[in-house]
Length: 322
Image (cartoon, rainbow, N blue to C red; front, side, top):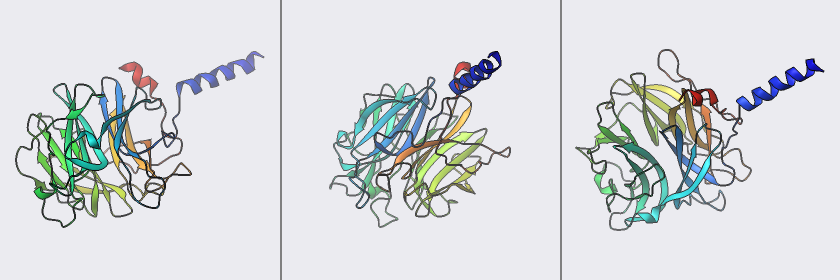
C-alpha cells in the first residue's frame, strides 16, 4: 500500500504546483486587442470587448475590459473600466488600447472614432491613480486626429497606440495602420513633444505595433499582411533603424486580425494575443484573448510562437521569489 501512496502524493503535488490555464483564457465574454501592464506583483490585462451578434457584419465594440492576475492563470475580472463614450469627442468604436504607468499615474491610450468635427479614427488618453482607475479623459480632446496625418486617403490610419518609456525617462507613442509612426511624448504624457516620424523597415506593415525592450535590444512587433500574421523587427535604439527579423506567429485561428502584447513577469516571457478559434461561436468579429510563452534565442531574436490550447502554467516559483 505504501508503494501506491507515495506516487499518488507526488502526482497530486505536481498537479498543484503546475496549475494550468487554457486558451482562450476567458469564455464568458469575447475579448480582443490585448494589452498588459506589470505592476507590483500583478499583471493587469486590458482588452477590447467584442459584442457583435455574429461574424457576418463588422466589429461592435463599446468599452474596454480589465482583469488582473498574480500567476497568469487565475484572473480576477474588474469589468469595463473605460468606455468610448467617456471621451466627449468620441463617436463610437472602442478599439485597441494600452496602459502605461509614469510618475505614479496610469495613462490609458485608446483608439476611437472621432465625431464629425474631426472625421476619422483618433487616439485619446485617459488617466487614473491606479491600474484600475477610476479613469477620466486627460485632455478633453483627442491626442492624435486624422487631420494630423495626411499621407494616406483612409480615415483609419491613426489607430492602435503603443507606448513605452525608455531608460532615460523619455516616453514615446507608436501607432498606425498601413503607415507606422511614432512621436515623443511630453513629460505630462498627454501632449506630443515634437514632430511625428515615419518608421521604415517593417515589410507588409498593417497595424498593431507593440514596442518593448529586453537585454539591450528594442523590439517592435506588428501585424503584417491580411489576414494578419505578427512579424517583428529589432533595433539598438528606440528610434530605429529597425531590422526586420521575420514572422513571430501565424494567422490566429479564424480571425483575419491579429494583435499582441509582450511582457515579462516572474522571470518568464509571455505573448498575449487574440484569436477567433477556441469557441464554437467565435470568429473574426467575436475574438478571444489567449496567452502562450515567449522564448528568446541566445542572439536576442525571438523564437516562433507556438499557439496552444493548453495555455500557460502558473509560475508559482517565480511568484515566491518576489
